[in-house]
Length: 71
Image: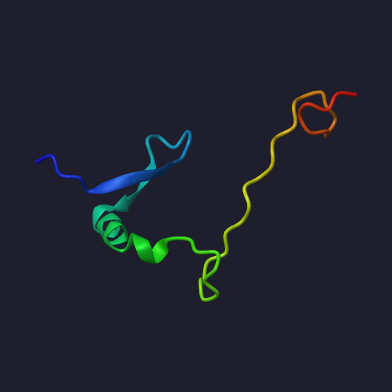
C-alpha cells in the first residue's frame, strides 16, 4: 500500500541486512512536539546535557599534533 512504517536510523555492518528504525508513530509524535525537544541553553530546567562536538582528527604522520601544525 506504500505506507511509511518507520524511519531508518541505524544499520549493522556485516549484519546480513540487519537495520533498525524508529516507528512512524514515534516520529509523528516528535514532529508534533518538536518545540519541547528544542535546545535552550538559558533554560535551567532543561534535563538534557549537550556535549560539545569532538575536535578535528589528526592527520596521519603528525604524531598527535592538530592538522596544520608541521614539525
